[in-house]
Amino acid sequence: MSRTSFLRRGLGLVPLVLLLAVTGVVVRSLGTAPSPDPVRSAVYAAPVADVRPAAAAPRQRAHAAGPATVSPAWVATTAAKAGIPVPALRAYARAQLMVPSSCHLGWTTLAGIGWVESQHGTLGGRTLGDDGRSSAPIVGPALSGGLDHAYGPMQFIPSTWSRWASDGDGDGVADIDDIDDAAYAAARYLCGGGYDLTTGSGWAAAIFSYNHSQDYVDQVYAAATAYDERTR
Image (cartoon, rainbow, N blue to C red; front, side):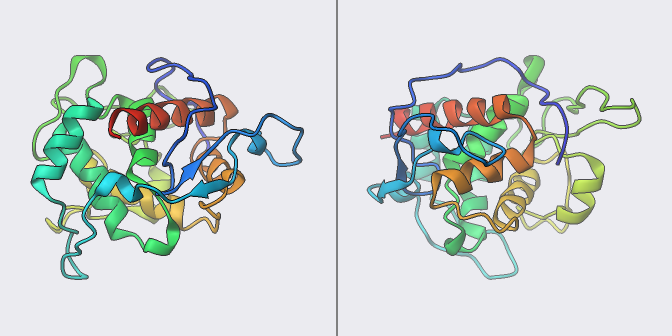
């Protein structure tokens, strides 16, 4: 997915010595040694421990053909700590549980993307309904050439959505404007790229593939770090 991020403001960068459960495991910064990778992979160090998988999100699964079940009590408590709307937090946690556990994708990563892209569907004074839809559609700026835009709370471009469109809430519809569906599509996209999300370089490369910008990777990392810290 190649585009310019819709949102260029927010939580701001934080010291990279903080620990971050970006993949369901903890990662620590080891510095900024030169790397041949397209991103500064050394900044996002290899994991050192698995101390709090998914911030204790329950790993109960619904029927394989339907959405995963996430504890409402966990969602309410974690959303309040993180400062994330309940429908958005529920979508991120559900998406984590619906992709293969071998992907090692954490809800904090999806939340980091959701914040940078659209402030969890609340950009510009919008509100996020319990149905996962914003009070007004979110349309990104014109892409290169002015022929298209990115859409929805996770800012998918149409060509990417046509491949990864997903039904995250089991209503039978894959809706780019529904954060349940968009979060699940984003999770599938990140897990489908063949990156090893248990490593810092793999995690950073996966985020870079979502939006080809090192600044974007840094913003997602900063946001995800903040959510991890708030919910410990």
